[in-house]
Length: 88
Image (cartoon, rainbow, N blue to C red):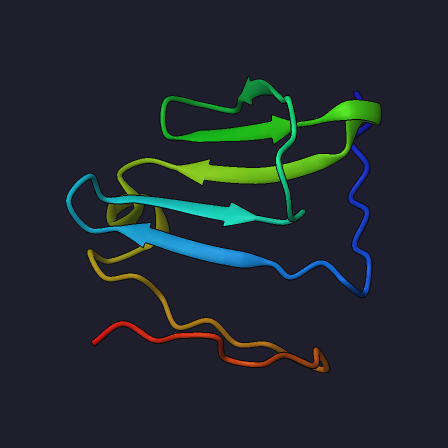
C-alpha cells in the first residue's frame, strides 16, 4: 500500500476539532476530493483521494486517542504558517 502526500505551497493544512462529537479532522489538501476511506482501527481513518493522495485524517474519541483526556499541544518546527482564526 502506497499513499502519497502532496503538499503544495498553496495548500494549507487545517486541523478542526468538534467538541460535541470529540472528533478531530486533519485536512492536508484543500478543496473537494472524492475519497475512499481506509480505517486503521475503530478510531482512526485515512481519507485517500485520486492517485492515492492522502487528503485527510479523521480521529474519533480524539481526547482518548491522543492522550490523557486533553488534546495535546501542537508544535510546528521550521514550517511557515499564519493563524487564520482562533476559537474563543
